[in-house]
Length: 162
Image (cartoon, rainbow, N blue to C red; front, side, top):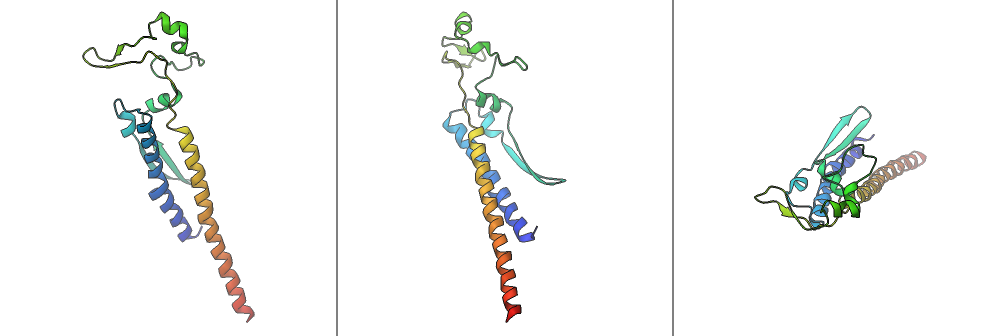
């Protein structure tokens, strides 16, 4: 790969797309008001790693963020087969989960709404759209480079023909 092309791609991904992806997620978290502790909002990090076949972009955030996006949380158990009893109306009524109540430490905490959790997808739809934008931008960058290579080759051929 041409050094200029590789540098353009690195600049776009590392200086543009990667930090913008984190900013988009943080903005989405603010709009959805997933800010009670601020832990998810402040947990983002990203890095580019050189792998054997090329480069890999890694994003990190607290695991809790995945549960918010899926609409699960306390009451969810790994390998439960997808049976989230706390979402069932009868279960919620029987365990008084359908009423407003204080949760958290006795001296503080916060009030629940009494309504079951809902998905607040701050992650997947934004990520998919941004990957598509990245794909299109990389195609544009490589297409411009390919066009310059062809134009230079044709120019050199025309000089030889004269």
